[in-house]
Length: 636
Image (cartoon, rainbow, N blue to C red; front, side):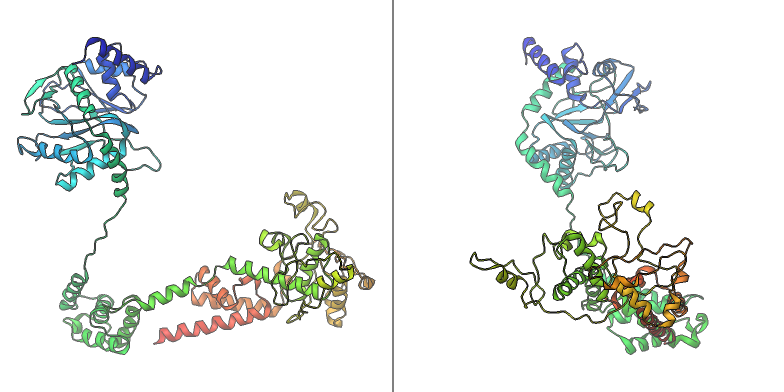
């Protein structure tokens, strides 16, 4: 036993450890009680003492505010009131509640609690305190700990320790505090609450080894508590806690053989055949599954099996309304079954190959980024081959975009050019040139004895292969339709990026980087085209003398004062092609994801908006072929 002086010193230490934010009771026993059960005083429970001891108290939860330690001790001393607490994030004890009607109560099994205590020793809990919970004669088995541990880890450890030994946690039989609670995503889920021990007039008391009442004094309870907490194997417990939490997330993979059960179910269904109208499709499917999975039939052999089995089934002649087309329906269901099932004992190679093929499709953004890099490389090599690669970054960016257009490729935006992975392909500060194979070359090592002319011969030698574009296309526009005009001043003034300043991309006039000579050639191509694109009142005339200048200047900006629509810039033939494509897609009934994937596969990763007029016609051809194949499949 502790002397009064020692108990007083321990109480002072506990009060200092607790802190002054929540003052403890003056009574040393009250301080010790609050230190054990007062670490988390939110959502406490309370109830009035029932007049009849056989009645269960009506518990309520206090959610309005946090209970104070002194109020907790005051309510504990009140003989007319019952008080209870719940665990927080950490806890220094655990509690096992065994009801009077539990199969683990001494009245039902005298050795059950002893087996529970033996099981607890495997995780380091070697001391327990037995208490009668109330007049109902239920038993509370307290497990004191010398220091706080994580509450959830302790709850999982107790569950993993006792359940393998045959003890099942169930309300009214065996309950654990703290319990293994669920995790709340939107709201906080509290642990279950329990009543405090040894409250006056509650019927709670300490029990001896034979489960007989021994004392109901708080002093005796606290003494037993300190002795039990000191005797725990806390090292073993700390090793068991993280293992229990880790093992909780491991799922045992049960290998249940359901093949025989599935086969028996199918045989039961097929044995009775038709028993009413509207059963044909379901029975044909079951017949097909049985023949394909368990008998290994496929293709025409499966069709014949479904047909023969169906016409010989009970009730077919009386209830089946598809006897005139039973052969056709047998074929349809045979095809469907082979798409979703495979013979038992074989691997699903068809579905695996289909899945691998789908996974091998490169993402659209990756394909588009790769095409942009190849276009930039080709444009830079073309400029090097023609000796027209500017030295300054701004001029070079416009020259690269112009070269992309001349090579029949789509021009990259400034944002695309200035991306980290693309900037090193053309920027003067990062670009060092390409060899004949198109790979970057290292800068030449210049010897001090070499002259400047020799250095130029090394850097601009004939090792660079002159690239020839596959086709040369001109930029053709119609009246009031100019996709490549510069943005209006209001748009530039609202932009915050480095690519859209008030001066335009190159610090000069905001316009598409295209030589005027190309525009002049476009006007001179034919008399009809000249009439079609004759300058109007809203556009400046093209300076025909500009082509004589050796420097490349942007073409004048064509701004329309009228609101233009897409239909004005599309020819009648292209419009009819687009309408035919829309009609064919509606017949196919494809979703937008499938259409985009189909276009990406047929046109090397392009989207619908990137297709040329010729490619639109080709797309219409592919869609109509697909539509014909679908019709043939439906007809068969």
